[in-house]
Image (cartoon, rainbow, N blue to C red; front, side):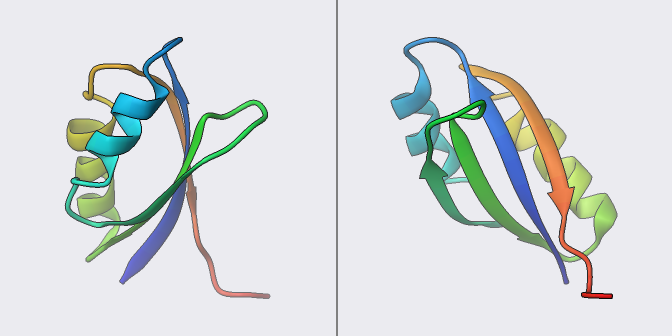
Length: 78
């Protein structure tokens, strides 16, 4: 199981609508609207790295109102 945090910027005025759509994406476990350089922080789980990439590219980045994403894959502590 792969876990990741997606740091997302939305288009001006689209944050609420994007948040609602994000919660419906399969694999998304939680999403929070935040203040600062990003508008949403999304926690996602997938079977493997390929599946994670497909979810981020085809299901999240293609949503109307999504401006930019940064994916941070969770690793084991050193």
